[in-house]
Length: 513
Image 1: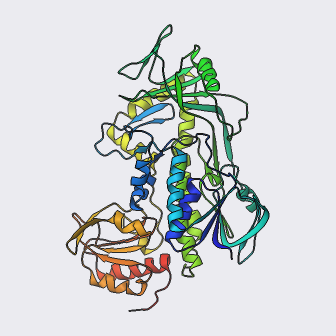
Image 2 (image 1 turned 180 degrees about the horizontal axis):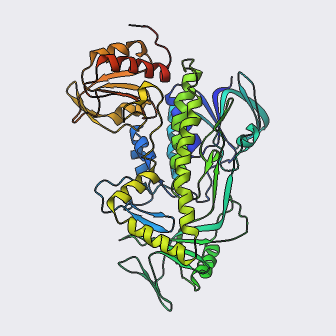
């Protein structure tokens, strides 16, 4: 084999997958058709659950250092209204202003440190698989060649050749709208007012937030103290645009003129991007030895969620592929990748399709719906619930068998503060290595003894924490909880359930110590 896993695509999903595979001791080969990272502006930042996961991997500080501006206040668009979380002490949704190009630089640097091979200018033009391997036909700078691996992951975006080659259906719909986004500075003829409105000489006031006209939607977002203002337009258009062709400032100003009905002078554009919305979801994330992740598996009709979902796909997939490649995967483990991430993708599709319906209505009834919805978002409970939905922090995977009985089972592990051996640490620090952990929070010798046969695969720690949520928790490499023992749960209940969970996720024990 030329590699353990061929990863097609060096976007955020493919690079995150390469990093995670290397942490698990697997040899990925990343093949990217572009010779260099594209200058075309794509995603402008990160948000949601992936920020916590990056902190658990020790990568969040690198991402923060690569940011192009200050971390913004937690205010987010949702279907043509605003989700304002600034009044919450602990908002469930955060954003990081990290353009995709810089995110890719961070992830590619980390993948290189870990020893992953990335080949740019190498396009996969064909794929065949059998019971033992996948072979990719590649067109590289020096001509065609073939590479073989145990598995191939298609992280090659919305027009995925891998998905098509595998024959995986990608049903869904296309929203008939073109969205244009620019971050700009203005000449002296435009004044940004304290409330976020724009005072335009010769025209009057352009309100901050969203303004709907007969010709489309205009969004204005200004941050206190920053000269850069975000402008956003949406228009229904039948034209097709090539994602690789950058949007010009002239194109954006033409769109502003059509939507607003007047010229809005711009001094300089810091960022320009154009995108369309689709709601598509692959019927299966796995077909034999070919797997899909990121935009190849799902396209959502709203902004701010695609990278979060794609990188979390990669984290779920990597440790399961590694277990299979190392020969210690229990039956059906790799199939849980589809079950879990398709479930998560459906949850994301739910709220993004709701956003599409909310923003696209143009009659008085639709205006009334948005007004009522905005009123509901003034309530803290609604803010928390919707923020968690957008962030993906409300996702808890269904856990089968006895291990799924505890409320924590399937949830993302909280970063508990741990006290032990005279040291204070956090759960997040344990997960830097992307290994599974059994965390004993009640000095339960019976549970440690029950897990002894898995010591080579599962790290066992004993520590204390304030207000412990469970006597012990079994944490998977993707930071989701596979099993938890209730406080003071009897050995008769806890021990068999722990052994069942260990076997289900990490295979048979090496010994029955």
